[in-house]
Image 1 (tube, helix red, strand yellow):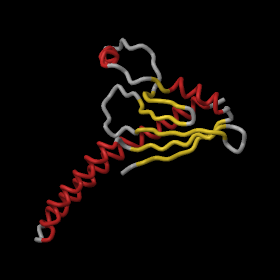
Image 2 (cartoon, rainbow, N blue to C red):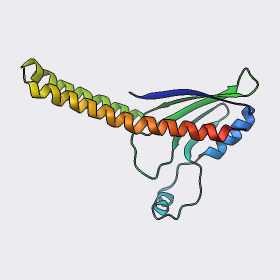
Image 3 (cartoon, rainbow, N blue to C red):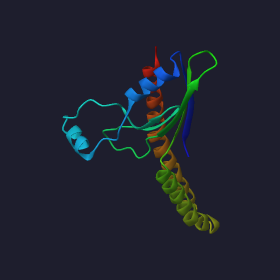
Length: 159
């Protein structure tokens, strides 16, 4: 399953980093706000929804479109050896999406393997093609969002 780990260093102090993160992370939008947003009538809000405590945060990017493979961001920050702040990010899929992907791949393999054992060649390609497609969709939905989220956080941390 996809994950993305990276480290961002900034010359800001941990308190200044926390303040910038507070500007990036807000509460989850309500149903009313989402409805208003669909008509272009939404108030300005932070790009991430989640929680922030001293030294750690959890967030997901607020998207106006549906992407089940968007990453959940878990981050920790603290003083780095160079006098600034080091932010460590770990991004992964939502647990329910991971469970669904694993179950789906197991079911595909459990139906494909007996066909392969019987020598049915079409099933070889069909089962492997279904798993390859699932991986392609997952990776295609996850990594661009993870890289974009990292860039948003990097931009906010520039002094």
